[in-house]
Image 1 (tube, one colour):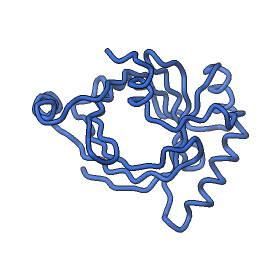
Image 2 (cartoon, one colour):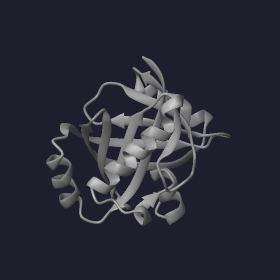
Image 3 (cartoon, rainbow, N blue to C red):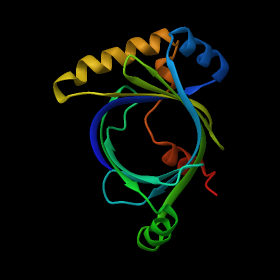
Length: 177
């Protein structure tokens, strides 16, 4: 399965994950599941490229994305390629591309008004929340406003927004491997 989509997304540091979870459930968001994910980021000349492996799943996803580095709701162009033999693929790609960083996280996924809400417990970094909402090009501004209102409902403060990926946060923190 190949999938290309335009998203508006944001990421924020969370200090009390239980309080945020309660607020999400208070919105009657649908709980999708809890997943252990390993994201391996690779050095690429443009954008970001990661291989996502999910514990218990026979396939992985190769995810390429380009997005703004701003601490606000941001537009992101994403291309996802499903990998049916992740072990062999990972072995080959590691011979071709240099690994930039590895992110080990447990992700809870909720859906609220067609918006994915991720509560992430990221090893070495702590707790975060992410919003992802698909948008047509003509709806980017409207979707940003929707995510800003969702931030307010969940009491997510502007100063807690993060501009970088988890892979870059780990790299910048000096905590890699």
